[in-house]
Length: 71
Image 1 (cartoon, rainbow, N blue to C red):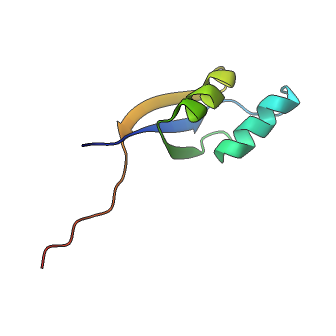
Image 2 (image 1 turned 90 degrees about the vertical axis):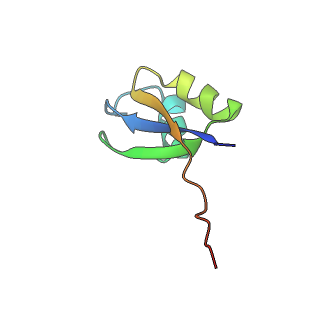
C-alpha cells in the first residue's frame, strides 16, 4: 500500500502574522518563503495546514519509503 504525504511550501512570509500561526509554521519546519517540507498525511498535519492555509501551498505526493534491497 502506498502511503500518502503532503508537500507543503511556504509561499508568504510569516513576518507580522498571528504569533500562533508563526509557531505552527515553525512546528511544520517552515521558516522562509520558498521552503518546502514533506510530511505524512495525518489529521494533525492537515489541521496545522488548515490553520495557515493562507500562507502555504499544499499538494499530495507519495510518501518516500524505505527502498527494498534484493539479494
